[in-house]
Figure 1 (cartoon, protein in one colour):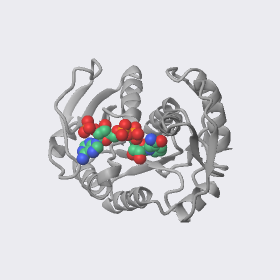
Figure 2 (cartoon, protein in one colour; figure 1 turned 90 degrees about the horizontal axis):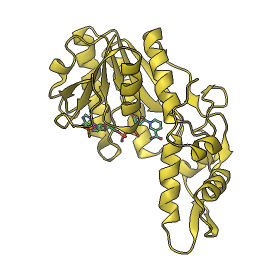
Figure 3 (cartoon, helix red, strand yellow; figure 1 turned 90 degrees about the vertical axis):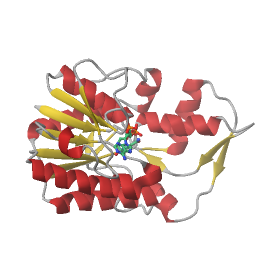
Length: 261
Ligand SMILES: NC(=O)c1ccc[n+]([C@@H]2O[C@H](COP(=O)([O-])OP(=O)(O)OC[C@H]3O[C@@H](n4cnc5c(N)ncnc54)[C@H](OP(=O)(O)O)[C@@H]3O)[C@@H](O)[C@H]2O)c1
């Protein structure tokens, strides 16, 4: 299969590119930038800006499936909503058999502005008429790692929003789930995909601090508003969804590992 990966220079997209190449697929990376020396051998490159649609038509030449993992939270209305609409229209017009959009669990229930744009992007894709799948994933372990590392930079104390929930997942396993979905073909809204365990952010932070040797005392910050209420309610978790196998503790012990399911 010939696969175009938008966001193929990013964290999840890069893993999708490697896995797809390993599985023997043809891979084209779509990026706003010219080809980087770090691009894996065997992948071709297309310069695409989803905000304008520039480069899309050429990028889709000979493509059977698209993994759409590009996103720009700071410019989500243009890059995510309009970009997904332009990509869906171009995929439909080019006869691409499957466009898989990577989304986030709980975006329909947590009124965080970026999540609201992701939901608009899902709806925009569905309206294009392109054959699609949407895979909503939980927060990546690596993303929680970055957030907690940010908290650890705070002087003297470790500030933590209290009573939020998380069910983070290894990005490698999300990439594996995406590859399986490509074999299955366009399936509309897929089952949510999260990590093996839901836990409180407090528990996740205690495990993180132990793994990273951070001893500053935790200061729990009360969080007000509907966004925090959504994370407290666990709308970002997937009690009935599909689950990866790599726990947060296992990932902390070995963040660079590739896990197969
Ligand atoms: N991070 C999480 O915890 C998490 C959880 C669930 C779902 N997701 C979803 O998973 C996807 C990937 O997330 P990630 O954290 O791996 O992303 P990332 O590392 O931030 O990569 C985003 C990519 O988007 C590309 N991009 C941004 N604006 C673009 C534009 N206008 N045109 C073309 N490409 C553009 C960038 O490529 P260039 O700079 O090369 O153009 C970049 O490689 C996103 O849709 C995100 O919402 C993330």
